[in-house]
Structure formats: C-alpha cells, structure tokens
Image (cartoon, rainbow, N blue to C red; front, side, top):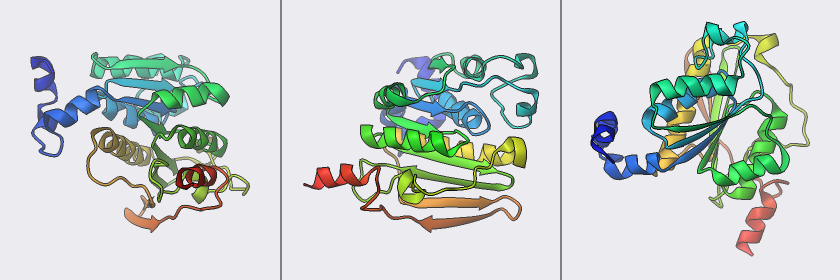
Length: 255
C-alpha cells in the first residue's frame, strides 16, 4: 500500500484482526454484486469505501423515482439511467481507486457462471427467487461463497452460503427449488427504507469478513429481523444431503 492508502484505510488497519495484511486482502479482492437496488446500494457503498479492489455491479433495470426512497446509490437527476452505471458513478465518487465494472444485463446461464467463477465473493441483492436460485447454483458450481439478503415490508433476512465448507448448506437447502414460495416484491408490498440499509450493510460486513478471513461467517445460520420490534431471530440451518444443487458436489468431494 502507498501512503495515501495507509491513510485512507487507517481505521481498518488499527483493528488487529485486519491490520495491513487484512486490508491488502480487501484491496486484492473481487466482489460480484447482483442488484444495484435497495440491498445492493448500501452493500456496494461499504465494499467500495472499505477498499475492495474490484466490484462487478450488475443490474438490468433503470433508476425510477420510486427507487429513491431507499436506493441510496442513485440520485434524482439520474432517473431513467441504468442503475449499474448510476451506481458506478456514485462508487467512483466514494473511492476512485476501486475498479467498478458496471453491467446493465440480467445474468443467467454461462454468463452468470463465468462471472461468478471470477469473483472471490458474491452478494445476492436481487428481489426474486429465480435469480436467487440461479446465483446459488453458480456459486455452488464455482465453490464461491454467497452472501444472500432479502427485505420486504418490515422483515429482513440474511445468511451466508459457503459451499466450500462440507458442513454448510446452500440456498437451495433452505428454499428447495421444486417448492413454491410466495413471490413478494417492493413494488406491490412496500418496504421500510432503513430496512434495506440494515440488511445491505450486513451483507457488506459478511463479504468483507470472508475476503479478509475474519471472524465467523453466517454460514449455517439465518438471521431474521422484525424491524417493527427491532428483534433478531437466529435460526440454525443444516445442509440437505439430498439437495439437488449442492448434494452431488459434496458427495463427489467425499468420494
């Protein structure tokens, strides 16, 4: 690190578990953030400010006036612009040293798998089950840890799915892809603005811990937040040996 970096990240470096070595890991890290909306905004904010060297920000949507109540990457004068490009402008203002690749597209198939394999950590900040399952499958195939968040109305949740750990479940262990779950979205159900900030910043925290090798990740635990009472519930989740997504991978690894 140069002198300017030592000054910029000095408050991280003062933390013994991080120090210079941990900060250098962040500078060398690559985070793939899928979604530049309510969750992706605070998550990307803190990844950039903390000095994650490369951030790939993906969103196929454009900024709408209704987004601005909670999607803090964007501004009023950018209504109508692609969210990924708007996010890149904001992150460049926070930390111009960070390399931000802005992709205005819906990731799927081989493209999703290729970008996932290039990343050190993936943050799923999307708002639908189809994307979450596709991202989870790509992370399992590549052995890349996934930080998953969700928020609707006054309810939020976050967990880490790290398929590199043989005992850790994947997203499909918790939400089997062959089961139907109610699809709820902010456009119809509403969302409390600070809630996405709480969950999104926690996603950033888990991603930074994974990149720097700090502490204990949320793998195997699901945190649920009721923002009306500001009460957290922690639920232990186990890997499903018969999981159609990660079961075969772990069986092959143990064979």
